[in-house]
Image (cartoon, rainbow, N blue to C red; front, side, top):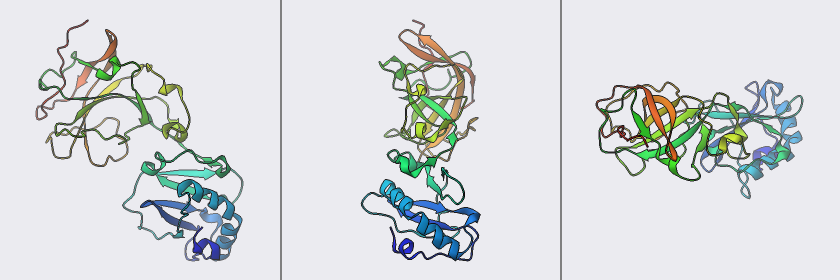
Length: 280
């Protein structure tokens, strides 16, 4: 625990006591809300919650601890996509906030912290594959795109937060990669999306009972064409995301295909998915 917490020092100028620390270069925020509005209340909060904060540090920075400082407005402005957690209990319980990119890389938090997480919109990544050389002219309503991953056993489906940039597309290929995704109808708890607990949506083969969306993940600037995503998610770093088509799952031999029902007009983008595969 930092010297700040040991001394119990606290700012008196803002309603609601809030601290910030940096773990591996990423900010962590801790607050007590309006119930702690002055220096005396903050000192009491730090004293009463010292054991809880120590357990939090053991989870976030085992062996190193964290250097907590009073939060100053704007010092975390380079970070977005904060995920809040409340603490089970009554009265003046602390509140925690972490960027999603940090949260999804952590091990499960210890039960002693009593963290209560929100549910987030989720999607299944059904395939990620390279673009064939044929061109986009065939990507129209009624065309078919084979989902290469669906022919593997087991089908390597990824359950993730809607719009998550995990395992960025476009790696090692200036043309980018294709992704077929299915948005789930109901949000899922953070422990499921972070991989801390199981969920039926992680099973394979997946239940394909919703519309599928085809996206191009490419390096910024590699394609001049851009079309809005009908299901926008959190900001993606390092790669452009272009919505190409919507469709339905179609059984195809030992795997599945995407049957396109609606496609964007993107003549600027090439190469593109093959759409002339013969029906098995």
